[in-house]
Amino acid sequence: QVQLVESGGGLVQPGGSLKLSCEASERTFSSYTMGWFRQAPGKEREFVAAITRSGSATYYADSLKGRFTISRDNALNTVYLQMNSLKPEDTAVYYCAARRSYGDIYYPNPSEYNYWGQGTQVTVSS
Image (cartoon, rainbow, N blue to C red; front, side, top):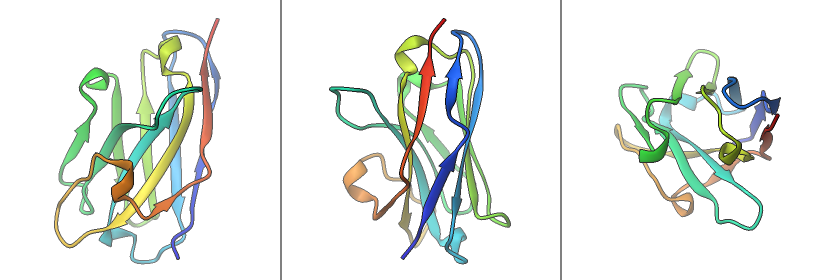
């Protein structure tokens, strides 16, 4: 069972930045594709970004390209989400997710992930 713990959320002003972290308990972390999703009140959970198990490729929701960056450190069992130029519409609970993969594959749908963190709240407001 993989346990994921997110951190780094909080309140930030529009235009500001935050960096989220997600640490995994799994020692074979490098076998997992990792994703970030978010869910705003009254909305469905949506794809934010994903990174292949080696970190060789990254994928983003079209609307977030250029502002968000996903990365991972397999030695630390951690995936990150750097968020810049934040907007009020970025306000949501952000979740990291993991799925064991057998190649450098990414998964954009929440249903394709087996393990989830508890989420961290990001609020963008002045």
